Length: 468
Image (cartoon, rainbow, N blue to C red; front, side, top):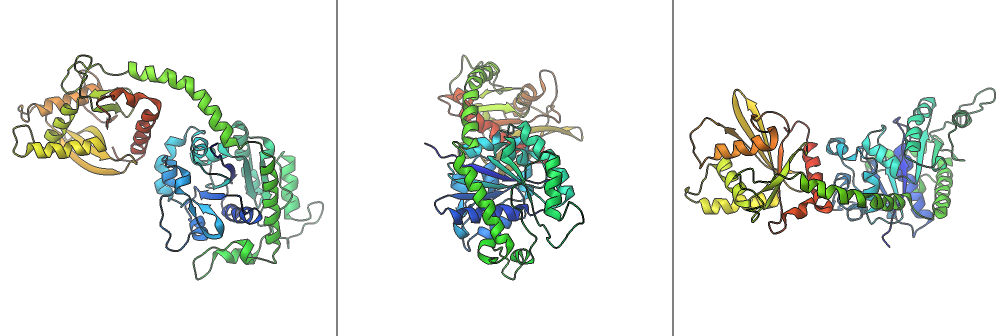
């Protein structure tokens, strides 16, 4: 049976509460208390604490959190680091921001982790906000731990708890942990100290707190600042402190809960979603087929009469129009539009082979715009990971003579029909993505697995801010 991870999400809308310290050190303690338990930690924040704590010198990075969110199996991206902890290297906020649109569905991360082939426990350190990735991490979690250190962070808990409840997370699966408690501070009256004050106010709001807490410790704080630039764990470098024993209690509590769980939440969510998706996929495939254009937009031939050689599938960025293009038509169009080469040009055969080879491996994006009274067409090509490998802008002069075997007319017709409708002119708006497909079985691209890949790369392209 495919392994499914037990997911612990660390979340707080307030920074500076010890969230990342909790995530990293909990991972070390869980692994130390149960050596047979695989533990993986990853972060959606961009401070690279996880990398500094667990990374090994000279270790070759196979990929990062970004690649995981783009669909690479998390199991293939996890690096075994210091203290026997597996970690997925971090990415900057700038690299993750374009992917947020893909995670508007709160189930997305649970699906990725359900397919991750990651056994044991996965600990997710989130950003101090409720962006799409944080919401997904809350939805996928078996346990949510919320560190609080003051009244402000306690007040912020209400949004996390409300969201977790909306996502169906059991109330006892979310717990607050008083953190960075300065035990030197004492109060008169019933609230004797910080931890008592925080727990009392949490109880009044109906929030559950763990039995233990985490003290403020100069020794622990020093573990993140040293000449080596490393971050050291409490387990190995803070023996004799109260925090050392407190983390042991928290880890033991998590293990007791883990042992009592018959099935990780990610497993249940993944299986339930798959069952729900099956009838939806059966409905969506015919809908995609019915929405196809009946002719090649370049040559105008009806595909029912000339279906051979349809090696490209196109779809607009707003998903309003889709269809197939003949391989010869599209490759000839690219040769003429990008390089001014036609069948009569010297060296056309070699050039066409090169253009065809690139088009068969990449996604071509075509975006028209009006600039200074002229029509400009932006051509870009991307790989499956959304990385741009080619860019060229050409002027589309529809009033020119019929040069290049009518290339202006054919390109204008393609853009006019695909993007703006009959009788309209190209302008700023949706763009056209052309994907290579198997010419022997072109409609296979409309199946769920292939179409998910199409939608995935278009989401990556769409997320590139200011591209079009």
